[in-house]
Length: 325
Image (cartoon, helix red, strand yellow):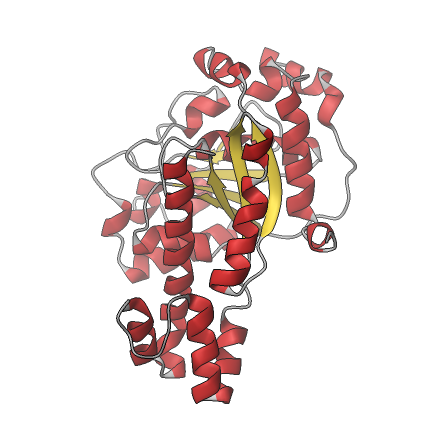
């Protein structure tokens, strides 16, 4: 047994009960800005799941700054998702490599000139289908920064849509932009079927004549004009459930950002977002990254470990968050 495996096995401070596994559930970690710790969050959630006895495949889709392997303390694998996209391999699991963490498999991001923006719809749909075909009951997607259509589509394909942000004003602003872009992308996916393309175009125009200034306004307007279409649209977007996670908090005011964003989601999007929790700013994070060792192995007793456990439990049981007034 390696020292990494021994550390995880011996440090039993964050083992939870087994519980039923949900088959092939996809979690996506996104956000509008780079440098907010998405890779650290993705890897930490994956390790929490493995300590609950659940198998996980962690996939690096953060192109241009792929560093998920560093958070796992491993070298860049020879195989990557590029091999599947290019057709060099026909099965995505062929580029999935085991890690030293029991139950955790890793698929590296693109290692050639292929960019996520270059994927056509057929390639993207094939990739999403392949995610669903992986044999591990949980799949975590570490998405890149920005709001390209493909990034948004990978985000929307997930069962749990996690928006990560930090307390900095630029990060908060970019998180709102990411959520808005995701929401409108979801509407775009439904527009041809529902025949509401012109109304969505009007909603995107700040000078529209219908008083539409937000997604919630759009839905209300469509319901007024065509109640049947409004009901169908509401059904189409009912799966747009955002999970908020604030990283690198330092003050009580930072913690409250999640609650404030919940309120904005309710007012602006007309949806109930979940506030998963927060993660402290802690020097242990960069210290573990410098040593190329997972934080949960290097500092298993840190407060962050407990915080990630709570977040993971909330993701496994989001209804518990919605029961809290």
